[in-house]
Length: 194
Image (cartoon, rainbow, N blue to C red; front, side):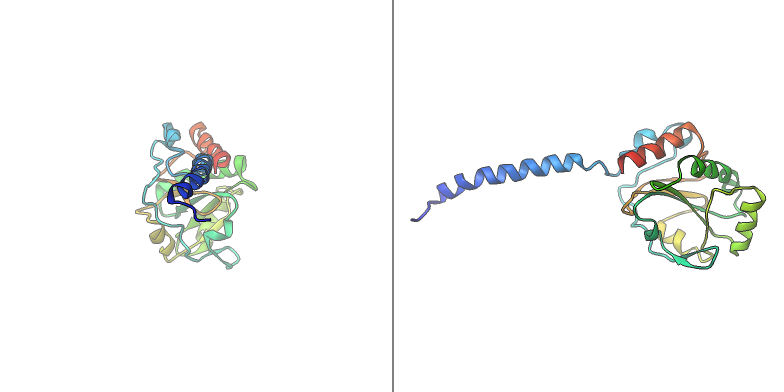
């Protein structure tokens, strides 16, 4: 039996309609699109921006205090706030205690502050953290600036928020009070949505 083109089209239409319906439903369920957190860019977080053309998460190697090599991909599975800083950068120094508080309040299986120092030596950054009793912040080090360049950072400090899959959610150039109510609300929203 030969089917006419009209019968084929009529038979295929419900299948195509069902596929289109499922596509729309599943697209609506994907809440992790850039710009979702723009409404949280108020008060202390007013400089937080979502870039339409955000660079991919850098694959650049950096080191922990033991000298082990890591990349940001090692943190997949949790929301991370990557803070690029140095002890010779006055705005960086000012915001470190608030990052310490943020990590103490929200750090855990779902969220991690990742502070990457660009000091000449890791020992200088470690001494700073110890002197100021910033015990909640892990120390990572990159004295090459390769990671900052790959991330598109135009200066320090730079904080970049990544989702659990390594996609950039948004960034905040410059100093911020990461223990403010606005910052806590932003990070809690990221944990819930991404």
